Amino acid sequence: MPLEFSPGTAWNYSVSTDVCGYLIEVLTGKSLDRFLEEEIFQPLRMLDTGFYVPSLKTQRLSSNYEYREGKEPILIDDAHSGSYINPPTLLSGGGGLVSTLDDYMAFCKMILGRGSLEGHRVLSRKTLDLMSSNHLTNGKDLRSCAYGRWSETSYTGVGFGLGFSVLLDPAASQVSGSKGELAWGGAASTAFWIDPLEDMAVVFMTQLIPSSTYNVRRELRSLVYSALSD
Image 1 (cartoon, rainbow, N blue to C red):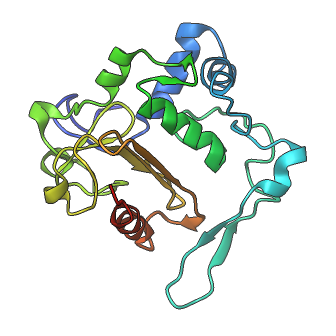
Image 2 (image 1 turned 120 degrees about the horizontal axis):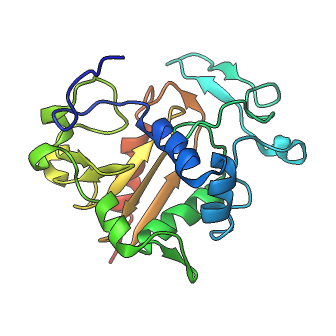
Image 3 (image 1 turned 60 degrees about the vertical axis):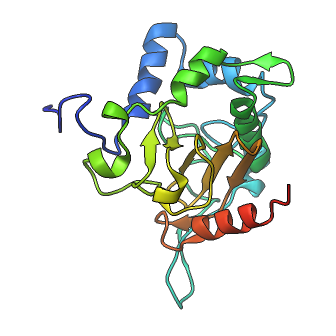
């Protein structure tokens, strides 16, 4: 299959994290679910995160809806009959996990803690430094080198690290935040960001598909940062 562009010359939303998931399986000799459970979920006590929801927990799973302005939303992914109530045949590293606010906040706190949470180190400090650096060519932002048109973040003033966006210039991005902030979002308009300068992590879960059909993320940022008092 031909590449869209030569590596290092542009950026596009892609299946790169799925490729990483497969490489983990090849390099460790373990299935992706087992590796994540042993190396991340157990140390961080993420007890409700996995590639499907066990039958005893399905009553806690939310359905997804398509947002329609001025109209009732349409149910498009029923929690009781959707794809996450049975073990998957493919363990997708880029979009296969189901989680909770508490579990994902634990993960974000680990990132905020430079790779460690409550005495459990998941990543080395140097690995996290590498992940949180802007890896776009010559320090560019997404606007100047993004190849595709779809992204979970504003293009201007925002770079990309290894797994999340990196805020380079809050003024240029025209969103509330701090330089060095790490963030991304999901297809159901979910979002997280980690602001080391403010020692703060935010996780937002909702069920509106497709992503950003309602501009809830920008509103949430404004509310959070306007509430900071010291």
